[in-house]
Image (cartoon, rainbow, N blue to C red; front, side, top):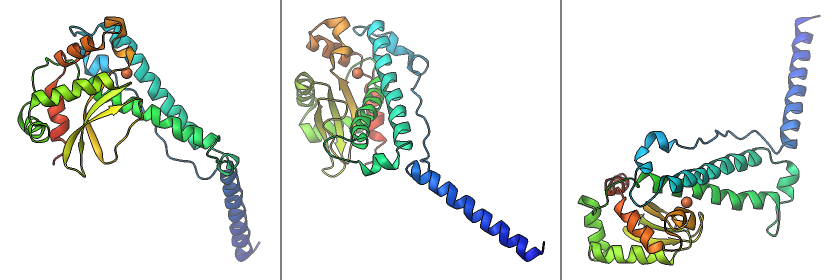
Length: 237
Ligand SMILES: [Fe+2]
């Protein structure tokens, strides 16, 4: 075989392979999406003080960690579903019911469940007290004084169905105390939460039954304000 004919055959067969691969990828919904599984943080290892708190029991923590790990596995599961969507799934996208709608809505609960709990666990296990430094200055600027801030935060936590957050709003350039009824409600764009209080019953029912106010006392007694200050200072505002 002449060299020219040989090269021609190679070129045609490469093209055919490319077409075949592309057709297969198209059937599967396009190119594979790069996705790395998220791993749940090991809080027993990185934050053992969570199992040594007055007012929030080890049993509560064990159960709470199980819920957090559940959000991580649901996030990974949802991402795998997105990775393997078929063309049929894409063309059947529909606002009443469709596979893509279901994944897109529910993955936000998993992502919220991960972020909210990591925020919460990483500032629990402290000694309470009061915020200091730049954070205290910002609180006083935005709320008048710390007592006024605390009053609004506690009342928001009593009024919430799931979460109360303190977040810095990058547009309004101030702190807000926000209410959350679910892991994924109510988001405010371009604001970063620096403090989160989980007020779902699973956070306190074992220890306090329905007495949420007593749990809030325990939460503030175990809050690590240094971690909250660090969250605020990392915003570099
Ligand atoms: Fe929780």
